[in-house]
Length: 316
Image (cartoon, rainbow, N blue to C red):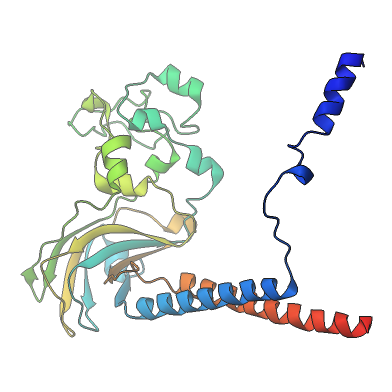
């Protein structure tokens, strides 16, 4: 090392920017301050968890499993009835729920093309090279057969690039819930504005050539499906009942086009009606998590105090 380099090294070594020479406040935790902090956080978490549980218990929710019903097993189109057990004020959310479907697998989550979903026309060679949709790229790999048609009615070419492609799109939940009635009177279900506005406005657009699309990319049910769930048992919003209150004892009937097969992965399908409040839908897990975390903080605070007192007695 040269003499000049030695001088530079010594100057940097003794610089005021070294941590031990920087001016400022340096907190020194004590047993009292640490205990107070843990107790404060514990109380906050306990209160927040209790509040969430109280609001969650106010949610009225009705679940109906339909994949195990004889009428839905025997036919692709079936009618089910749901009895209202408690009064439900509008707006009432309609969800479908899948159990045992893992949307959080790494390969599954990555198998889509954001560029394609944003409306850009891509060639098969470009998609193969990017590997974004692997292992499902062509219409044949998507599971289509000769004679299947695009949204414009034109037959799909099996060796062409699927629009859209990828595992998430291939597994699209295609059950349809229609003809909603309360005591044989038709009610309106709003299926608009169920997807995130950022997704609708920025991320999902149709391509210029609709004759090659097997689905409308701007369909909100498709957009909702394309946002993967983090757990194997999940629900996604289907629509809202906005113009009708539901009274105890009423019977809702709905016609289901039963297209999505759950027997391949031993899954279950549910139709759910739920009210909402300031904290959203029913979520006991979040409230219990906060309560458990708050209890842990308070227990740690007590342990710190006991451990400190024992240490003090040993020193004496």
